[in-house]
Length: 346
Image 1 (cartoon, helix red, strand yellow):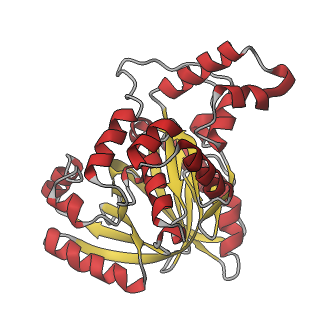
Image 2 (cartoon, rainbow, N blue to C red):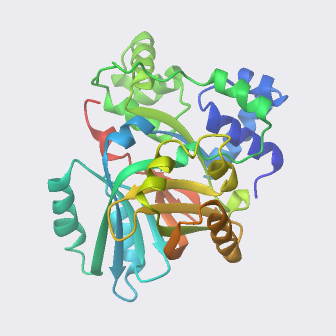
Image 3 (cartoon, rainbow, N blue to C red):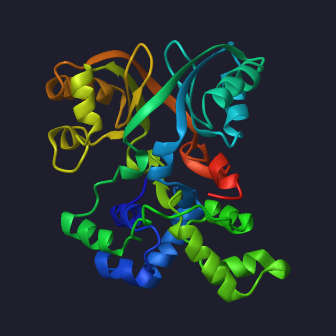
């Protein structure tokens, strides 16, 4: 388990992932050197990490699909590990219920989705059945979730340190994929560290600084700080598939997750919420303190949204991948850059 001081550091990096140690030390009331040492210990063990990932803007523009996969007995982990290696797959969970594996898949549209479902998933010997639920709109992304270890004043100060969002008119650019790969491993890497990693082929330090700044200003990407759920006291997660009348669904998608609203403050465990196309129309992923926590969340949902019907629910037994990070027991053990990051221009 991470201690309280570590949780404060992780949340500070959730808000301002590339703030300097001096800036973070000023907000947290700790020495920059001690923060740097502690982050090295926490990140090297895979308990928390920063990485370059698709931005919220990019995710909203992508063709995302939740895919449920039913597997043959004994082959669940084989299927899950195989699919986790694909850059098109952002997230992989092993789950309870009628299906065994849940994916969040990124494709270029209907044609590439059809190919992936048929030619990739459908060709695996361990797959019995699959169901795809395209994402129509994201209400809440995992990057919005916070640990809750900091006070409101600290969060406000940290938001002032966070990089401003790119201008709406920003155009895609071509980047050195070696820099992108390094940032996918460590979202806080500096220009001198990048230069050292590139070795003999490296351009000048000024060129690396310039390219690093251009990457971080791209509207398609952002640096995100993630954390091992079990190490923060959230050993389990759950998935809820719900139905909500269209009128309320529109209100929810229009900003009901913003800070200060009833729904947002009433369900702080929610990591993600998406509107989907299928026999259900709302998908929720929630982090849990224990098995019974899911039932408590359902009770709160019933009070917050009386017209909401929970159609199905699952417990996430293990997460093998989260936004490109390969996980074991909740901790990062590797990285597969997403399909977006592998492109030459974005």
